[in-house]
Length: 360
Image 1: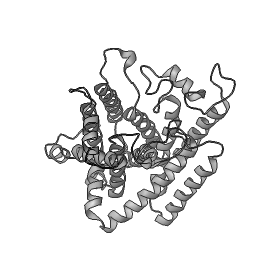
Image 2: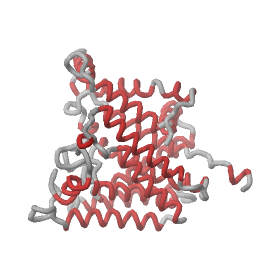
Image 3: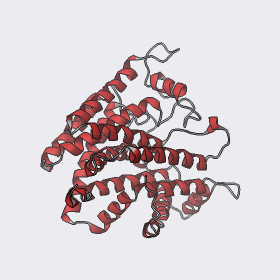
Image 4: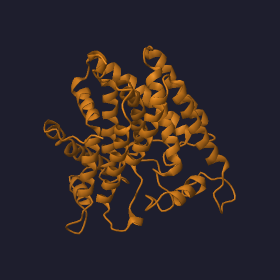
């Protein structure tokens, strides 16, 4: 292998900025002072519906898919060891961080699924497909197949004991599968937002990222923007049949998330390429290049904030202190989240200088 071919490809700063924006939004949403008081666009829809908060996780999943072909192209002959290691580290980190927030010695009370665990599974399938294929059509076809199979089961398969298929909360095929297959504690009593069947359509979202990374290579941004609009239109067209629902990760939700995420990526790529808004884009690129560390630090902060050394949690005490300044509840919730996000980011430059970033 020549020196030129051995050299890793230049980083895609637009993709770094997109990943950074998603992880910062994820932190901001998760660290609201009071989720019930938060601005509606920063709170998840109760069930059906779509807010900015609902788009953050699929955008990150899309970024996983978009970046996977870059890693495969940089070392196409690499062994599968690093892939397996990354999957294992992500999954173990997810379980460990969930345990820190809710410690228990009872394995049935451990939440074995979660955000990092889902990312690990999506990445594994994306890496498989990226290495086994070259063009965009194989991952695109598999993404469509995953979304179609997911949708057909939701619409046509009844859960045991139910007379008809259901998309209601805690009912239907997806909830039954969570109760049947997911070990340990479900995040909700009868279903989990990172449960079994919804992971299939999340994998479809990641595979869409693999396909789009290859499709947009060498194509004019205008052509890619048309693809983004087409995906959004397709998702909206499906909503009478399949409402947008993050917990179920319906196909309509996935398509709109991929379309809007792709459009956002194009905008950030244009801004970073032109060197505009440097303080903002520099922050986003920095967060994108340290995304796993940012996520882990914010989870450690949550584990601290949910402790109650004085009778109530530090989270509640902090929010009430900010609320006591006379701010309206939604503004107080956002101020708390901004301060907590800043606290999350504060140690990251120091960790980076020390070479202590968490890498999977």
